[in-house]
Length: 573
Ligand SMILES: [Zn+2]
Image (cartoon, rainbow, N blue to C red; front, side, top):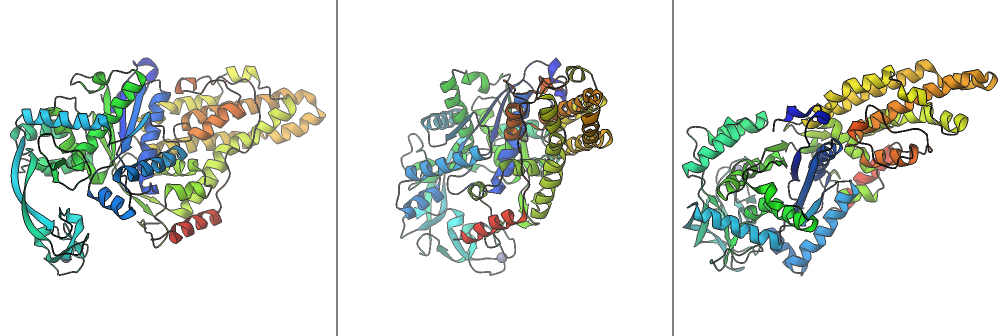
């Protein structure tokens, strides 16, 4: 379904939407770089729910592979114990940032095992699996084949020492692990030997695959322009896709391939299937029909949010796996760029490799980060920068100084002078402020739909300026002073403050996908509402009185940010 088709949801039928974020690897902590994606997806999912659509948002920990196996060994625990521990940490962090998964699972699940086996069987039946003997680097002490990242040596091109088996960080050359000079195993230090082994390949070079992928990825023009250009490079007339090695030899933490003892599915085979395994568990827990989501003729839209580094897996391997295993294919894949902090790559030594847990532990408000990322994300694959000084300035001047201030400037008069009662006549009238918000709402909805939340925030900030300008010109504080001597001025004071608070409620609706916790407090604590606000409430927010007004959001101070950076520097190592 085209993105631009839903500017006005009230006249459209309810959409059914499956949305995913990429699966974080169960080998480390969630950091702010990860959160770019989860916050982006969450804002989009919440927006769709507010529009009345049926959204299922699933994700899972990606738990298989050599790094997990070796880390568990190093910690003296089983891989299962390691991934359980990390799952608890990840779900705690995501909850802390308000990520509203409908289900968060693990790829090490019975559903994922069964689904991976059935994908494999279906691809075999299509003649798309082939066994081939290949030569690989093998650690003779540890008795295991070594992934590229577990072999180091001298770059074959420039001679730089201590380079990984796939690319040189010094000169940027890419090569195979057998090309390294003086190679050694990172696991044991031994010199690797070459050893032959049978591997299972998904035959992406089959013309059926490239024909399908050209149609899906290029001809249908669904992808972002930058992604589309990449795909043209990979799938151009001349280019031929290489077959994909989907097996790994024991010892390996993963699912053993049926009828192939000692051979395991490569983690990247079962990871995307993990989206469906999580969905399957969600469906069985809630009585939903799994097949309705995944059948080739499904009427559910399916979107994957990912980082640009895993575009290859999500726009080539995954659609091809789905197509030839007899499933529906993704409606779209949305890639985002990487996070930099103060213009540079996140760095442990500079303390800018900031973990989600440290942010929460320092009692920084998660909604600040959601707001800041929203203000930076524009739906493209460009990198985005968390500039810490800009972060402080924007939160303080815009989020607190403009948005929250609208309520601060008007709520007190309503509480003190009118015992919380809003002016019903003003609520029902369509004042120019309220009209301005309604007139901008379709553009804001369109910006949410296309993940251009930078535009959402720009439009919302312009509306904040408009409302604050109205307060400046109407001067309710002067009316309040005059009313102390001339009570006939009171209705005007009540009317002005009501107009402002209605506009505040409307803006709350507009910003709710970005600021869910703040919006919920406004609903309950400020307006005493019994049900959550939805997009269709924009025209007439169901408010009639003011319950109270407390500090909804505080300002950020520089010391708190400095402390956050210091904590992440100390935790080095
Ligand atoms: Zn080099």
